[in-house]
Length: 396
Image (cartoon, rainbow, N blue to C red; front, side, top):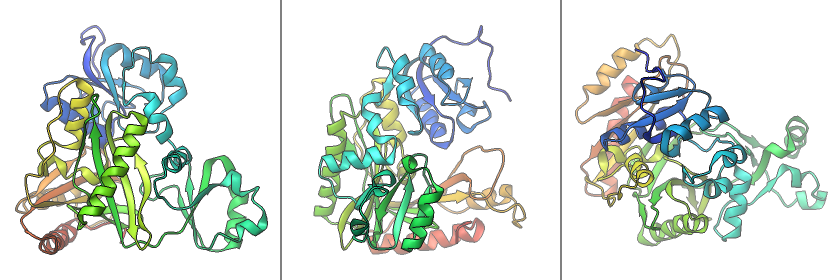
């Protein structure tokens, strides 16, 4: 079924426009529809995940400015699926402060180097870093102050382990520097950590901050495999993370939803990255909380007072379901059926037409009953085993 509608027949105004059409845009669209809002999505194809649920689709690359102009003409407010946007070009057409968050607020967060500069400017702890451009002019004796291994990261577009490279030796570093564009990469010190944590929250137009529980994320080959909420963190750590979140959103006068990824270990709590959008680590909130991360973003953008965020259960596990090899013995239809038959399963299919290796196809959430973190962790491991017996991770 095609959702591309004749321009003469469609409404001229939509409550909400979304730049992007992937699974995050899909879940934002679902949240908006639950609030009775009409949604217009700008994405390459009306068959993209969000296009299947939106009221109207502007079929254009999300980076295409003509498409952005059409979205502005049709929508009261516009939100972002991800941070891969052209700020300077959008500034030329943003005459009504239509974007949530504002372009000024999101600008320092759209690439890793500007993120690092922001974090340093407000004295928030993060791994030691240097841009490749600055590294190339660093005296040799100062380079010796950097111990190996190092982590190289692309300045833009990196996610799920993409755009990251481990540099093990000085020789590897020298070769790497000859292969890349110095403006597009940075180097970080290697961090040995005990846990990867994440905090997602919102800030409304009045400056009110609401946060979801801190979660622990479990990675497989640099890709998030599953998430446990809440994490086993003490009061002081929770307060410190909340202070970091508040410092960032207040400094930027940021309105919307934002996620922060942390390393935690002997070096304390360090920011890994900031995501100026909804985040994979908070998908559990759809079932486990009084208001999901998508509902928060939709409400804030549409002038609806966001509900307070409360867990409506003891905890939750969210498991990512990634595409498997073409020759995997069980079809995706069979896997979906088997997963849906597990007691307590909440399966979210992204509606992607083709299963390819490593592609995010769906996620599944279970509410937990354990009263202690250890009980919930053990419960989660049992659930994870059941799910992975049916739909294994392609990143063992």
